[in-house]
Amino acid sequence: MHDKDCIFCKIAAGELPSAKVYEDDQVLAFMDIGQVTKGHTLIIPKTHTKNIYETPPEVAQEVFARVPKVANAIKEAFQPAGMNILSNTEAAAGQTVFHLHVHLIPRYGKDDGFHATFEQHDSIASDHLGELAETISSKI
Image (tube, rainbow, N blue to C red; front, side):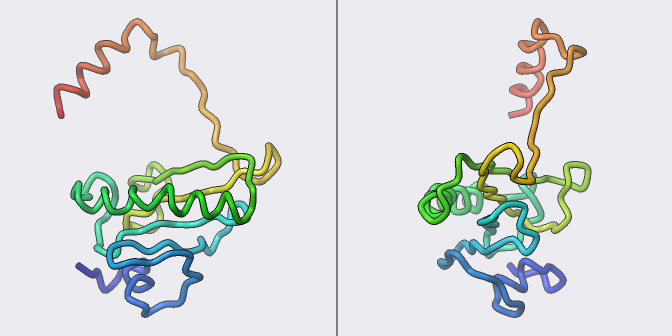
């Protein structure tokens, strides 16, 4: 499926240029035009799907099966100290292109330009984790 208005669908179809890293029948990996760190790569399904909420399991399987292959190629090419792997879902989480994509962001140190930190919130007490887990698992 191809969304005629989706920039990533146009890239996957070859209608727009990209700096390709990897391609097969199901998946395309290419350099993010807004390099956060050297080697910042996106992996997308060629099938249009808005985000992880709307992604069929078989499409997710194809995308996430390629993550280690591309991540290891980035590691070999640039020897980063680590890597962040993330996918933003919906505008509130920072999604700006509404076609599922996974960011592989090589990390070179504290001052490499990317800041992914997590702060614990005391308002979510650890003694409520069981309740939270049950609320989620009841929806699976």
